[in-house]
Image 1 (cartoon, rainbow over the protein chains, first blue to last red):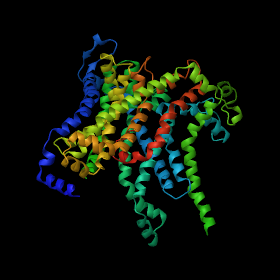
Image 2: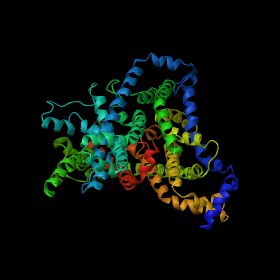
Image 3: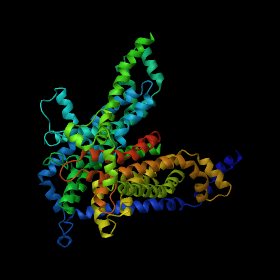
Image 4: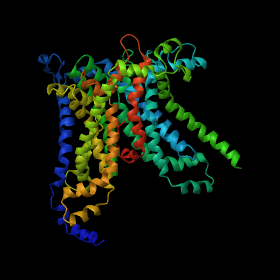
Length: 307
Length: 277
């Protein structure tokens, strides 16, 4: 106890924490240097590359084109298709994940004997590698031998086999369904943590006052989990926008351009055509478009940290 | 009185939960059933639902006819390497963020948060160009560095919140007794950080093990992690769903088991936004 009081005194006098003012920088140096080399250097390289006409295996033909790639981008119909797909992709996936996650969390917040088990099992989609998820759903969606068509035909929901991933009008929605499945456990876990932070006494008081379950949900539950919903939602918008591995393995962006999102388009351009100049220009544009969401999220999180 | 209320609970809670659990588990359960059905049977009569039609045939083929065990080894090397590098640089960084107030602290913390938001595609293209120049393509080091772009910022944020929960008075006491900063970190704070380090490390391991796009782009013939290998099981002419399913089950198992093990500890870091995926 006496030690603590003496250190308090030392801290107050100021000499204690100020003595080695360079120490934090030394401690941070490894992490900062490594991330500078593997993140910021490549990022600068990406911005630079986007101003060049660079086909990877013809490096000698590389030349500076200024904003050429960006101008080309605006006139590229595939860019606009991919942008629109990205909007649908985020606009449907995140609310669906959140809705299903909210229902799951509310159910898991109730008392029932196998709650712990249910909680653990529901998390499984989140833990699986995305390539396994993508292949698994391709197998389920398979037009000839897939179980989904078998099931739907058996239940007489559809008449014949539906080519889920080969139909340009269905493919994007089929992939969105997969992503919803993959992502709802994340929301469920986050929202559950939020629900458990709402004091029980609020509900008791409300039911004494005769508030219906729906009004309790509207006036107690929803405001209580609003911060969690906002944080998780923002985080998810950014993550879903970025994620392209599942689409890449499921459809490769096809049929045609029907499941191209912006990051996937950038990746395919660079990977298949080795057109790195144009590919990075798409990637940079996408990053800037995403930037507003990132800014809001960063501002929120830093505010939390300061508290 | 208790009887109807139990019935009511079953109808309004157990039943819906069971449906959601079924929805969450069914695809992977279907994958397991597929892996247990011999390939010939899948093409003739579909996936076998009864144990009578099951065999480990696909698993034997996976081990004997493919290089899957080698691929597991590559994934292991990369995941462990990423975990060690990530933890090594993050422990001191986390200590600095939580114990010091210094000019630039906010900016540096922000920087680590920002990195986690970068689109993979923005990094993957220049990383390919840079690694090609430095001969790091198709090496373990290359993939460890690529995975560290995710692992380091994540570890820094997770560990900062863990160190923040350790009372400062402990450090102060040690330093009054004559310990230096680094000795305090090593003798006092580090032992208390162990639970945090373990769950952060496991989560990095899982993410690196499951990673696909870097592995596909920056890996190659020599270094081919499990996630890429699973896809090559698809076959040249027709899709071998049985073999593929066996690969998917084996490849997903280590990460899934670890995930179930640490999930409870991750909530704190998640709400601060450090978790991807």
